[in-house]
Length: 184
Image (cartoon, rainbow, N blue to C red; front, side, top):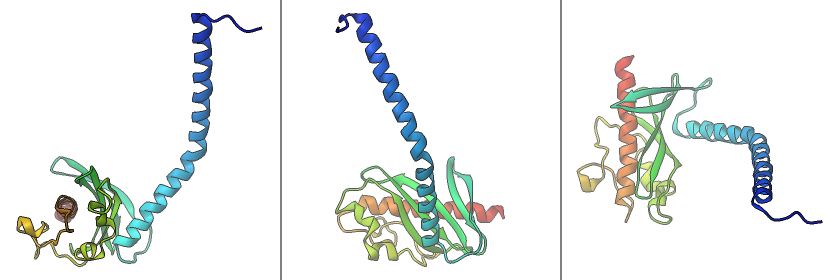
């Protein structure tokens, strides 16, 4: 025999469906939280390995406030700093990890996340000529700004805004390094 359709039965049915769905979501979250955390840790470890030369031990995560903005960085004694810097790009946030040696020279950069236009700004992850120009960059000698703005960075063709954001993210990381160097 079917239940009579009334407000009470409908509200009870909807509540039961919501409880079952919430329980299922909770179970799925509990099952996937640890693998997601491990994958994120592996991604960070791989990024640190890409932006800093070989080092011993485990880098420590620390943070510092520069000009009112909190930056996270990893300190690898003897190798330098891996600074996470996020700025606004053309399509949204552009997050980089920038490796800076103990002497303040940029070792390498890697894009952690971006929302740039595929085929244009997204080339910041694959255009080797663009990425490689920052390897060995000495901020004391060369200006971290695109050529169009009076700097020394060759922009990605048709992606000046993304190139500016990339250079700004690196400049922010250099500011973090400078703050850390003056505190030592």
